[in-house]
Amino acid sequence: MLYSSKQAQASFHAELYNLIPQNHILRQINEVVSFSFIHEMVQASYCVYYGRPATEPELLFRLLFLQTMYDLSDERVISDTQVNLAYKWFLGLNPEDTLPDPSQLSRFRNHRLGASRVEDLLKEIVKQCIDKGLIKSKSVILDSTHTLASTQKQKPLQVLQQAAKRLFRAVSKKHPKLEKKLPKAPKLEKDQPDAEKIMLRYLAELGETVETLLPDHEGAISEKVSIAKQIVEDERLLANKGVMSAIDPDARFGWKSNTKSFYGFKEHLAMVEGEEIITALEVTGGNEDDGKQLSKLLRHTLDSGVEVDILKADTAYSGKDNLAELKSKDILAVIPLNPIVHHGGPKQEGFEYNKDADFVICPAGEHSVRKAIQGSKTSGHSRSLVFFFDVEKCKTCPFQEGCYKPGAKSKTFSVRLLADQYKEHIEFEATDEFKAHMKLRPTIEHKNAELKRYLGLTRAKYRGLFRMRIQAFLTAFTANAKRMIKLINKMQPAS
Image (cartoon, one colour):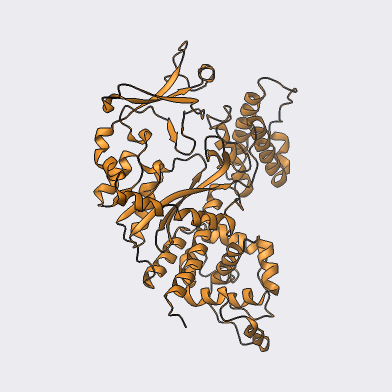
């Protein structure tokens, strides 16, 4: 049951708050940023008439803000706030007041904030920036950064064994009488060649049995059943290219460069260039293509009320569909072209180019080993950029049907270089205007560094894409709130 916000009663100990400096960052944020919107945002997730009185949503959201701003755990933010005058003042409590149990933060984050439209957090803070006249630039920069998963990647057999163990244990704990009806895990010999396939069949059988015995399963059992299904249905699992963790099946393997990789998630950002306010955010697995996010990021930015005349990004966003969309919206595309994004010839389904590593990834998750340009130099439209794959891996690939012809000596992926279709953009790339714009594009790297170094986005605090989205949007909200203070301070006349 949700009650309206209440002001803290006056306390003799409130005099202690005079010790907090007037220029303290939390005093400034409290004065500039409105947090009252959270009450309306989450009220649909509360029962109006029944249940125990709920802890004030704004109080819990302010705690999550402190947690993100100072990169603290649920337990640490509660224990620190209990003895930190600035934190407690920011929450609107008296010095002697008690704080909620740390478990309430998790419930509020997942079942209240997460059950609502968590992306509305970003829309709200951008709206406040616009209302205060802080956003004047009409140039937006796109880029992505990555976050490491909160679990280690595993081999397929380990994934299958752990998923089966977790599901079996969850059912046995809640329904001990059903334990004897569950299929027992097979005993595997050391280095057994077909061990993965045996465990895959067992996990599928275990999941089907649980659903038959408990058709109305919920809670932890539902979560484990869902993970088991996701693992069983992952065609790339046995090729070691799909699900790599039974604990966090949403995390994926991605590339930062030709030699550096990571395991986790990607945050795709849109940021106003001059004011460095984040206007849009998309969270995906680490293997997702950056260029596919342009349309969503641009739409969310425009929907938030930000005007866009110029869009800057790297080569990953230079697909012809992206350029066509920007041209249709009369937005100047400051994006360097790369031959791979021209998509001039017929495209093979499932093959994707990774701009950071400069190779093509096939549907099985293998990447090309080398590339070459073929065709006549005098006729640019007929030349092709050809990527070569390791044919020995193709011979044993489960996806070879329709992709690799048995007995073939090579497997390639070709893209025609249609320079003529992009003549106007290529000419623009050679201008001083384009070069001047590109010099300012790296400013978004500073924002990525801030999110990771100071606001805890280097590693996921929780597991799963659902919780990763909550963490990312809370981080973006906090970064924008801090930026608002800097922008307002710059607007103040020097004393």
